[in-house]
Length: 152
Image (cartoon, rainbow, N blue to C red; front, top):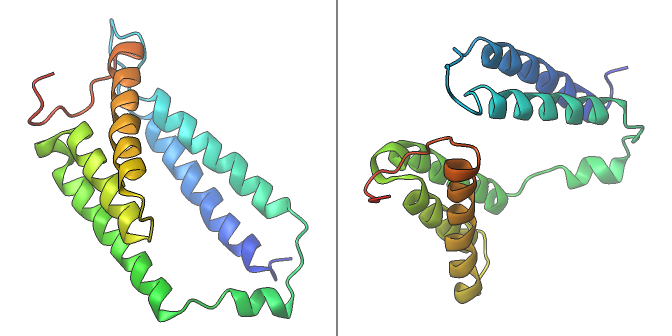
């Protein structure tokens, strides 16, 4: 039953998503807030649970060709480690520098690190996406994201 690797991974993800939703449900609720602090984490945890269940029940069979494709080269492992370091730096700087600045820097440098070379398009997307997300959260949902050094 647990022969394919996808099933083993999906069981781990199911356990993580259930724990995440449980912890999200324990977040305190605040009066006079249009959208409470637990809405986004519960939604993300539920989405992870649904996708994990889909992965578990997908009827994809293992083949030798798939097993060979699963091996990770040193270059790919280096890129994965680099993105992990970018994420750690992102989390460390988020509160101090602010959501828009750190997200813009993260998106631009991470996509550049992964090989995307069109700097103008990369720069536009790296500025627009965090700005739109900040506006949606701040003014649409009433959720304050870390402003850091930004005056707004």
